[in-house]
Image 1 (spheres, rainbow, N blue to C red):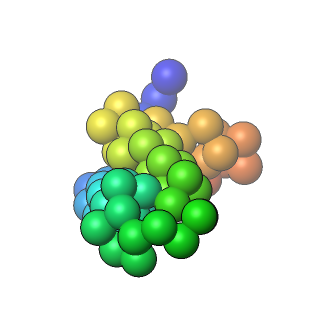
Image 2 (cartoon, rainbow, N blue to C red):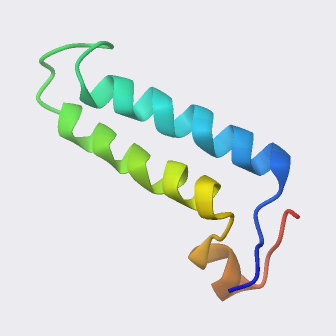
Length: 64
């Protein structure tokens, strides 16, 4: 697959992903009952690592 995630987008994805994971682990707002949603943070981190976003590919967008 062709890379379609640029450097600024990668940094943004990593920061958002880490914040969501910290929320999932209960460091931010512990025991809310919604902490499981923070595990969605794995997706932006994974797309930042591989530099390919499937959603960007579907709509023909590239930040690279």
